[in-house]
Figure 1 (tube, rainbow, N blue to C red):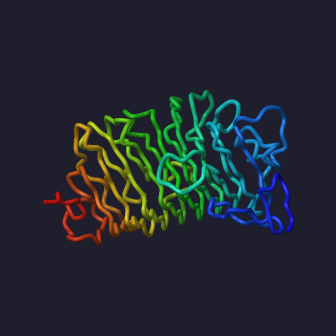
Figure 2: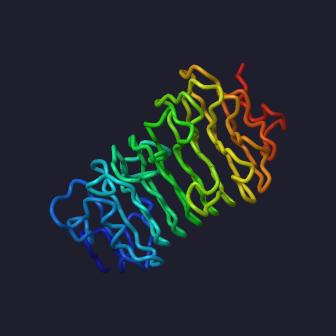
Length: 320
């Protein structure tokens, strides 16, 4: 048996305790610990980087390098707390907080007030990048920073991640997750919040075409995800797009739950809404349903496989 780097790896470099979500790779493992001090190399727990952005500069594109986060305190992208632009391909970002959950991940990637040109904590445009067991938590008030996570990647996978934005609660141009992803897959994620009350149509997921230049939501799947909203506006939605071409080919919402807070003062007209009939793709809602909204969706091009194929199909029924 070969043991390297503080005993984490066993059997020729394969991570021990694969239940933590750490992928096996032929690439390099890097470590990030926000509590570390001094100049570090990032190649072991004892020499972990302090910031996520330091790991971003060291990973090699297309090598399936893995970045692992300690969960003792909040991680920032850099000392400036600015956005991380991820253009490299096939990299993997894993929180080591233990277990797999919808929300409350012990690894928190945060963003406070910035002064640059950020649009999100992470703006991903790479191919095949994955994110596991991480809470993305933005409190940025910068005018351009309208999202917590902006995905314009191809074959992105997010698993057991929570995405929250506590600011821009009154901005219709904002959203928690910007989805311009090509073949993105989001599983067991919680997007939005039942705590932060929005006063306009600021959705959990925004689908506006080419907000990230040249990128559009195409063949996107959300599976077993929770969309949480607390609103004072009936026009609010959990998922929203402004244009007829915001979806290409298909958007599949499989076994997802759309929940509007009972403590909110308004019931959204629809959980899933586009301002125009979809002309370049379909949205299919398979399983799951909504509670606290007037309807699941009324947009032309949005279909449901729930109990009834009416505008209110998929609405939860009060138990008696």
